[in-house]
Amino acid sequence: MNPYHPFVWNKMVNGKQLTIVFHVDDCKLSHVDSTVFVLDETIEWLRQDYESIFEDSSREMKVAQGKVHKYLGVTLNYSKPGECKIPWLST
Image 1 (cartoon, rainbow, N blue to C red):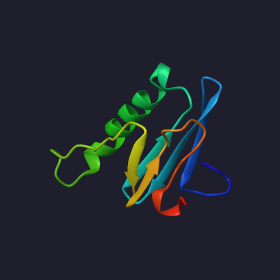
Image 2: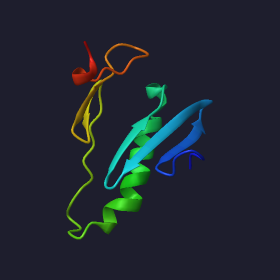
Image 3: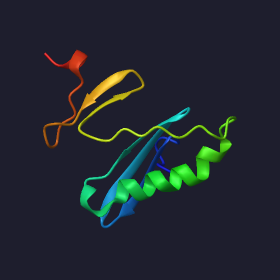
C-alpha cells in the first residue's frame, strides 16, 4: 500500500514499479515492462481473488489493454512514450 494514498498500491517487479490504483470496482494497472507479462500475471491474480465475489458467479472481470483507455469516464492516452494525454485538458 502506498503510504500517501490507501487506494494506490506499489510493488517492485523485475526492478520496476508496478502500480495498481483502486476506485470502488475499477482498477488501473501500470508497469513499464510489458514484455515480461507482469500485467497479465497481476490480472490473473485479481481474477482468482475477486471474480468469485460477484453476486452472479458467471460475471467476468472486464480487462482493457493498450495505449488508450477510458477510466472512470476519462480518456487516458498513453500513445506518446513518457506522457499521458487527457483530451479535455489538452490545448
